[in-house]
Length: 109
Length: 115
Image (cartoon, rainbow over all chains, first blue to last red; front, top):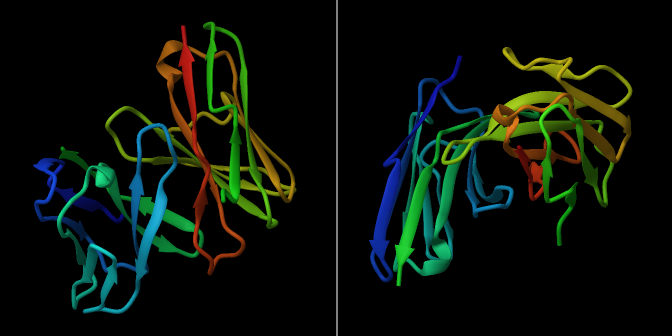
């Protein structure tokens, strides 16, 4: 059974700071997704990465996928209060998904 | 705009009653939908896979007689929590995709509180 770990579990930073959160898998990812979930809402897909070593940028967010396809990082530059939420990584194979426990980010004004 | 709609957004019910939650795919047909449960400050846990026209597939530890799933059409799946108890209070989320190669879209969740 695949296990996903995310770190840190909680992160509280000031607006304008940079941060990185991590996702590690006990086995090779089939297809890694990062989601952000705001309180009281469903997760929203941020990015999908498939190729080892891949780097994707989404405005202030940079996603890196490890060469071995077992780990990933999400870096946020100049965090804003709107970045507050639960960041989830997930692996998908077909329509089956496994979610990590998430990193809860709070960006303070 | 939202492509997967969940209703209701929140519901409060008394212990022992049943509650039905609807999940609709708005602009595509979904032969498969997924139901998740999320407890406070925790991640999503897959409860069951809803298959149109056939029985749902439940994850280990999820009582199929308590969490009834009906996927009667290609755009609608329902989750009924029967004889709800306070420990069933949680955030229930559904998801669906157009096909296995398309991104998964999530509903906005239903907050269930059982008193």
